[in-house]
Amino acid sequence: MSAGAHPPVSAAIGAASAAILNAFFPLDVAENEAVLDAQQSAKPWPGAKQQDFAAGEAIGRAIAAHVLNYAASDRANLTNPGTPPIGPGYWRWNGGPIVRGNLGARPFLLTSGSEIRPGPPPAFGSPTYLAALAEVRQISDTRTPAQVTIAQYWHINQSGVSNAAQNSIARALIRSHRVRDVEAARILFQLQIASWDALVACFDAKYHYWFVRPPQADPLITTPIAMPPHPSYPGAHSCVSGAWSTVLEHAFPDQTAELEAAATEAGISRLYAGIHYRFDTEAGRTIGRTTGARTLAADLATVAVLP
Image (cartoon, rainbow, N blue to C red; front, side, top):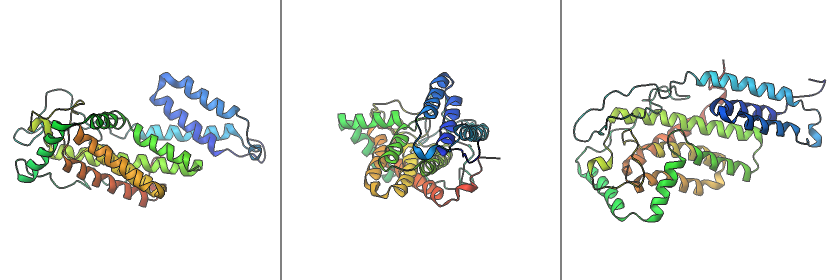
């Protein structure tokens, strides 16, 4: 690095992003590296004459290597939930693979997955439970095309390993508000931490209660999407949407109403799909709100992702 030159933040972020993407999408390495090369070749603005892109790239790749090493021991998808209990009110297993999700995974800020475990769902067969089941059945019997569209959108864009919806919303807000690189990285870091811990807590509760899905309790409930291979309570979509909406509302307070509407729609989409009760979404939203608030209150320097 020449005298007076310094590594640009944008180069470090670009290189770190490319390295992480390369690890998860090895078939797209050439495309990822081409984007980074284009970034390096772009004509710099006048104030960037003393920037050393190669030095920034080296920092980014080194950080990415540490993060990937940390992620290799996160224990995601490793904990066996065991055999489901048998009896009224329990989720019924079809004998196929059971999604483990973040059960037993290492959280960032929670002490354990059970730290914020919600209380139990309404007792199976109780008036409260039967009212919740009746609501799902009523939606199933009168489901509109618009509700089907909402159910399918959130099923595709916020299920399993996909965080497409939350990341798309975050990117759009970062661009529209012209957020600087460092602040954008902080927001996205908080977003992923909160969502990850929400799923750690969510799957802990799912396999603690093993609660029955609505169509298993009432076979006349129809579903426009496939039923997820894990228990009902709490709702994972609401756990995640509660987390990302809390983080983004703090970063973009002028967008609170829109973010609340999106998070609410993500949760209610599972009722439209016939695969969750309203109390599933409420418990999930509380989990997400809690991990979101915990993330916002944390000193990010204490989040140990580097040796």
